[in-house]
Length: 287
Image (cartoon, rainbow, N blue to C red; front, side, top):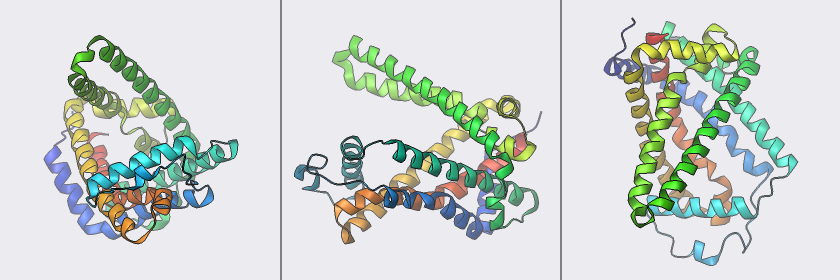
């Protein structure tokens, strides 16, 4: 059985991040930055029906409160002003495909850095041969995850109906249950894309490959995945809120709402390199 230490993985991963942060950040910028182009192609049209004066007034200057206001307005606009036409859906699909293509290259860069300590930016676009397999595997994974989320939502609805006087406790319990279930579901197959890039497996075999790698150290990997989730969440909330407030200082809200993905892209410059280099070390320890 291969040995896997969370502490050693964190130490080695952060050490590699310090050595190669320039390449990793640049690759992350190219991978996530494409989403900044999306609102230019199909921008959100601000209308009174979508965004009332109440939504815009009394905006707090703190990052947390303003992020909540931004998310609320973005949700309203998404459901009232941006029509999901066949063209817009096709555009979304194209961007997801480009993102997946670059993601495979990012995985290859991290594996090369772990194996030899060397890689280059051109590797980011070198994994086209694995794209079809990765697309099929990712689509299958998304279908399963969506089905589980729907089941959890239905279960939460039943609990709210049965225990309506204890709504806060039910929501807290349902949220914790959802997190545990998703960790148990996702963690065993967390390396399916890595297996495709590294060993050129098929769609089904990629999940089997990930399961074989994770199974002997499943409980440690669940804890490791939870740590990555916490790190990503803290960075996303902190940097995302700061960027949004900075945008608020120089741009109208109607423009900020179109470029809300900028907050994700900026935080991804930190979260993606750290997360992927740590996963690369974990994969090499286990696979």
